[in-house]
Length: 313
Image (cartoon, rainbow, N blue to C red; front, side, top):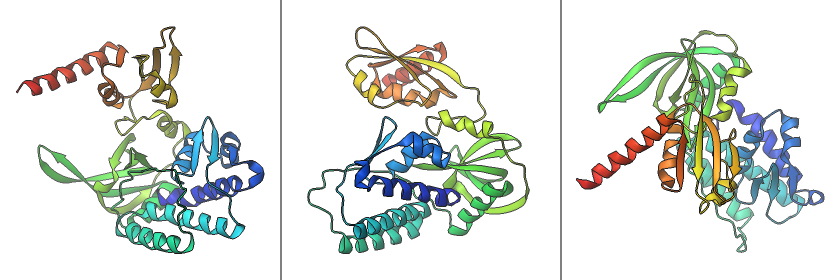
């Protein structure tokens, strides 16, 4: 979790916790009302809930608490541990490990886990290797629209080199557990793998960026998202045998789903690069088929042919 968002995220989590732990709310709250109160998207609230633990869930724009109600004192202690753990995960590295170890030890002594706990969850969040000073510098640069310089590690043909970059940072992103810095370099929006950044320095004052520019992130599927690319439409067919999995969880927040008479699905969405959707299609072959565009169909076909050739070696 980037530190520049930490305070606002803690405020949201505190409100979610307090509201859900009020028995009068029956363990459920409306996400839309909360999103309006904090001026954030429903997607942001969903990420908050996913980081709160197995006793909390987000479904159909509602947030649920699946645990049991305890005394006010225990609730306050639980919330304190929840907030501290969230902060620990944001730090990364040795700091995270030490803090989590200490918190787990304290929590086990003060609130032993119930043997009736039936929930299990696993998150695979990459550690941030940047030191605290660098994180704070990024925080300042993002909030104050500062331009920074840093060395960026690149690997090409098994050769590692550090290039000097000058960027105005916009956001720290997390895609599938990996951290990236989104920023403007020569007025072009780019993303940089965060743990390949070293030697961050302030350079000069930049200019603020419109919400329209940052809004490009709303439909990003994963780290293959290309910030400067114009989104294009993709249409997929999903076999009825696996349709239930695609109805449970959206591929993209911008998708449109139509169910056919035979139970199969037609899903339309927009992407910026073939690789945003190709891994999913390849994983579900032959139950997911690309209907259009032709370029993506050819891309998938080429990948399958390459794989089959490897098997024949």
